[in-house]
Length: 240
Image (cartoon, rainbow, N blue to C red; front, side, top):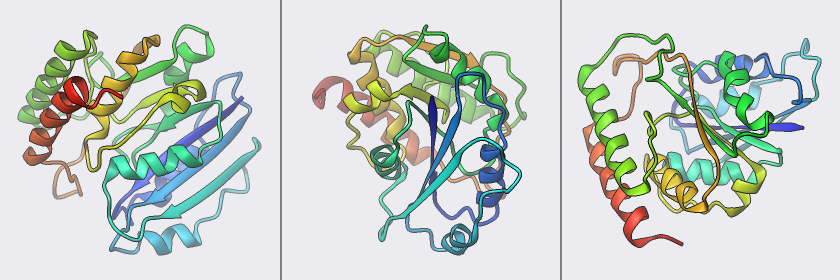
């Protein structure tokens, strides 16, 4: 079985090389025999593109591993980068991985477990299910819980972390999935669309090493309002 890891990247010159190394060397459970990296550079303005052009897969990796890199000529947002990556992904299972080192590929076995066991079609990696995490912003935590609660009210799911980066799903789900949002609207749009598919959804605990704005965190309060709009849009109007 092939795992496709889709990595949207924007201005991550300091971390993208390390995250790719971590992904390539991540432990994979029995049943995953091949790894595909799909990296989408969303028109970075720093040296991310140069880092990606010079990156080579480590030579000490025994499993078959391939890497595809695409670049947007204009910045279109995280959701648009993921839509590009999903279109390129050829794996049996697709996993979303941010490039900022907040999420640890060492959690891949936990994330993949319910799908490989035949119990789930979609898996969310929750930062709020007792996994180890860096202690940071109280109001970010409140904001995340509020957005998850509003989303749950419309989808009738009982997720604890709708806004998590770690979303894993089967190729069958990918083939039914349509993503039209841009920036950070992906999380509520994805959740609304898979909820209507009626697929089996699991949550598992993950570790989380959040970063500060000084360390490069990009999401802000404006993105929270965008997420609320997307929750309403993709649950009430854009339901195709």
